[in-house]
Image (tube, rainbow, N blue to C red; front, side, top):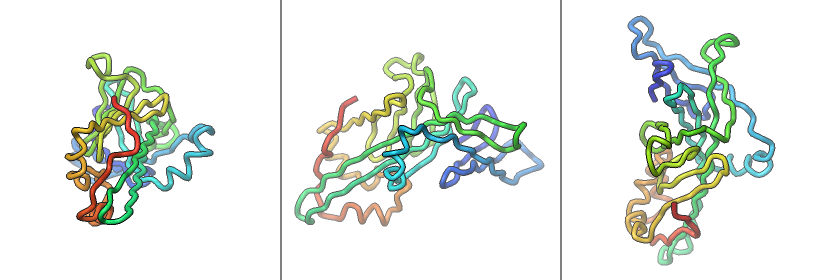
Length: 216
């Protein structure tokens, strides 16, 4: 992503320990730099039951600039479960989504090229959009129909996540099931290797509807 605040290009590294940083306006230094990400600890209420579950999830990380000058760092955890009985019977799948939001703050006095990540559950009037493209952030009050303090996401399906209440709302209407079934491999989050996607849903297997989804 491009940060207007820092006027730099950022790419989070796997594991989210660093940001791969490049100044597109520099004519002298065209070498990338690494920005150290110093994370805040999660609240205790999340540790007892979340750590083991998060370790088993597929994870993506996203760095987002807000119009206010604030910068948000989002960790997106997705758990996919496939139940294959036989190739002749249906397959049901369940998706669980967890997102954790951190505010990124610069600390040049402590150490250059370092951002401290502070865990938050309120991003104010903003809502964040995540997908396979560049993440972005807008003010909900300026766009009727959007909800403040929400994350709208698109992966193998799409939905919204309430940051404060940690509640995921997925939208998968019955009329969309056939399309989703046919396009499942293509719509899985892009951190799945194509060969692995093909193994998840063998040819000839019919997909059943998810066990539970709420409508937005």
